[in-house]
Length: 358
Ligand code: GN1
Ligand code: MG
Image 1 (cartoon, rainbow, N blue to C red):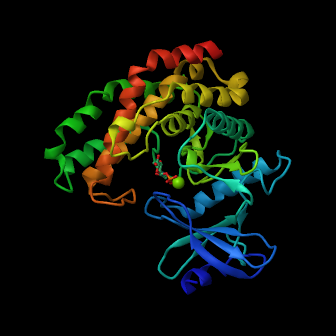
Image 2: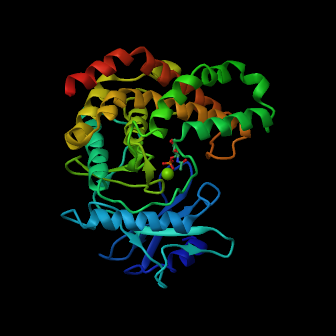
């Protein structure tokens, strides 16, 4: 066992003796480990929170604590139906090590599964239901939440960052990206047009998850029913459409997010219908007219944003997302763009499905 990790885990108020610590999952931002304990005591998730991406980890952990406590008060099984933050032995929500890294722990929820890809419409339905329920549970959470990443899904702010990145051309890659940059520029007006509806309040702002890809959702291992949303780092005020859009980007893709084979990438209308049906099973009664109207578009919006973010990181010299090989962010950009095009081609059908469910 890695003694450094062991010493960090020991800072937290864990039940039982640590038996093993292993790396877990494939997050793009944080480093995640599972801490196994001996015997029947619970296991734990230990994370090094990326403090470059999240400049105020204490505020982020406080968001997570308040939101999970709010949910716990409403559910049947508070230790299973949402995350449980485990404090340090001093009662803090995080531990800062000597190197300045921030660490946090939550309870590992037994007998659960995660997926990288939706392999059935039943799973997509469950995923939609899970996020719909999450938003419904937090509909009466009225305390302000810290904005943990400035302008996270704010398209106007994203375009400011984009303009700076293209101008600075830090990695000297802009000249080779004429076509890809054109993909962004040709949609600038349309995407900002949508965002202005959020800015002027036509589309309401609520407490949302903001990172709803399938791997951030926990399912029951036996029933395959959705259990809860995990990775609550980006819980903030936003439009609930962003949660739907980011999930559609993930669940409806017939290929991988970073598929090098673009033939495999497209949007599945069946998955789209299933996700939306699941979401509406929890949210149909409380959606505003404007949310209904832009529900299908949300998939295009967040997929576009992801094309922009991957390409911007490639232009910046790969500073934000973890990459597995040098061109990874460019491969991601192209695969997400293929998905965006597929959504654009099928947009009339997406709208018809939403209208049929109204
Ligand atoms: C990151 O943290 P993770 O791997 O769940 C990113 C999301 C992106 C996603 C792309 C804080 O999610 O916004 O959509 O990668 N999270 C952050 O897969 O930037
Ligand atoms: Mg995350």
